[in-house]
Amino acid sequence: MGTIEDIESSRSSSLTTETEEIDEKDEIVRFDNVHKTYLIGASGIAVLRGIDLRVNRGEFVAIYGPSGSGKSTMLSVMGTIDRHSKGDVFLFGKKAGLNATDKILANLRLKDIGFVFQAFNLLPSLTAFENVELPMLLAGKPKKERIARVYKLLDRVGMLHRTKSFPAQLSGGEQQRVTIARALANRPKLLLMDEPSGDLDTKNTDLIMDFLLELHEKQKITMIMVTHDVGLRGYADRVINIRDGRVAGDMKIDQDQRMRMRKNLRQQVLRSRREETGWMSSTDSSESFGGVRTELRAPTDYGTVYATQESCS
Image (cartoon, rainbow, N blue to C red; front, side, top):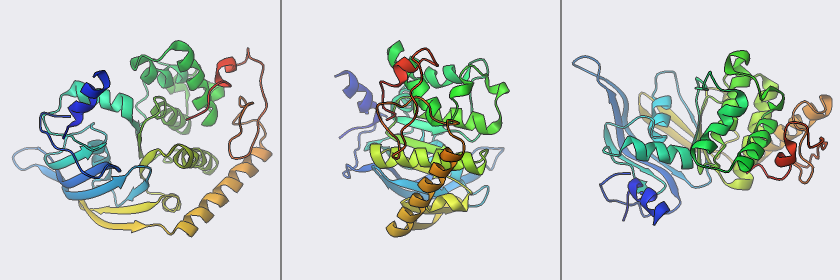
């Protein structure tokens, strides 16, 4: 039996002093009658009103619903950024109790959870490179490993040419792509995304979704995505409808339909790459992504002497 606090103790020898562990080893996220109320004045505003939810390891779940339905709040509770008011939350098989310390929750987010914020939340005083590097720096990763992974991730989201740019110098879509790269820096077990395509055009939406689906399929990363984009729901394994702070529907996507959509997406991305050769990827020499091999640059370009040595997992 264990809690999130025991996760930390087991790393050195998982979130509260409450001891309870779920039996289902494949469950990454579990909500049992979860409520969230914001205390404003004497009454308060109930945002989550008894959410029951299960997300298994390796699933890709899309969450949709009208504005104000509680989608983003639910994602924040999953990511331990916000605390629930009532009910039970389990993460990675351990209970995340209400008395978990900020230090323990921050360490969990750093090592196990990647978060793509709708508002980006990039540090304005750091470059794109430094924003992506920061989680690995906090986690104590070696410099060589950090450099290799930053270049690889920025390459894969089409931002290798903006490594030295500050957030204020980037468009909304460019900031979003840097945010996605940062969320993947420490190879999270759980990736939470709040409108990841909200500021992207169609081409870059295709690029990012192709990349995320590749990670999901090859690395089995569990992904939960809040989106208003109807076209993105069909890529998920399940679609959950949230309305008035409750789960109003939970639908599995037909596997054949999902595979057709993913195949069409891959073909569209390949067409875009052929039309604009070299706009996105330039460092991969020892491996290919989706069957596309790319040009090897000189080691003096963009630090790729390191980037070509690491796979983007």
